[in-house]
Image (tube, rainbow over all chains, first blue to last red; front, side):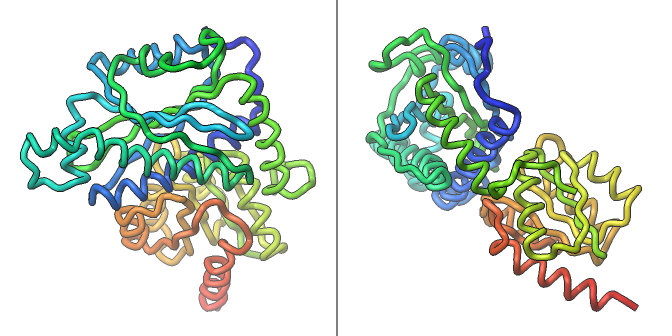
Amino acid sequence: MTGSEIPLSGLEHDALTELVNIGVSRAASSLRQMVGEQVILSVPSVQVVDRQMAATLIRQRETDQLIAVRQDFDGAFSGRALLIFPERNSLELVRAVAGDTLSCNEAREMEEEALAETGNIVLNGCLATMANLLRRPLTLSLPQVIRGDGRLLFELGEVPGGDGVVLFLYINFAISGRDIRGYIAMLMDLPSLESLNVLIREFISRITGAEEASDGA
Amino acid sequence: MPTVLIVDDSKLARIVVGKALAALRPDWLRLEAGNAQEALELLGSEAVHVAILDYNMPGQNGLALAGTIRERFPAMPIALATANVQDEVIAGARAVDASFVYKPINADSLRGFISGAALKLRDAEP
């Protein structure tokens, strides 16, 4: 199911993983300030798969109903970023952000707003850091809260050629001391991936110096 | 000459740290490891004076590795490299007497740690 031609060299794949890692680490630091507990991250996974496979990768881990905050980004490269977690974690996350004193009803009332704001801070933090490192601005859509299973999260919307191969990035996160865990996921379609590739190559030559990257001493 | 061990699962990140280091101290030697296991093997076989560790790595993370290194080398200058500035990570680094270096790394962000390490190594000389 994996795309046969993985359009990234070893070092480019490495650079992309590192970019995402830096972006998500910053985003986690912002989330930590919101929830007051440590946010634990996994090492990012970067894969080229078709859309169905991306949905399957999440569905294999999560049988529950999911809730996600989604933001589309557009610029030198475009795609969709999602903050995803099991729906049953949702109110716990709202309490973590807005305060434990909230009643169940109060938490439910502000659920959408609190989730959108949390998603906005996490996804913006991640994407803005990546854009800065690549030196290209990205325009971000407003955050939208969606519910459904993996398939719905990745196929929702007006993305043309919905069967195409996408670049799929995801990181697991968990909040220490609370029953909250989820994923930060990013999808990019292939034309975007090609432009991203150019930027990654620029990024590599900028940070390693113009000379050919060597293994060092 | 001091030898610096650079531990990062990203080859690119190791190249970047190596380049920053070469700009600051061109005569220092560099060793690289892609994970904690490799790092510990190198520490067993080579004389290492300074360690720069990535935080988020598969297997043992950089903070746990810093703890292991600190037990074996109480005076070694160690830096934890990450963009993850959460209080717990900073406190964890402090607890094992490791410095904090912000990613993305360049010669400027590494300068403070390397100057400190150079002073420490000089003081430790007989």
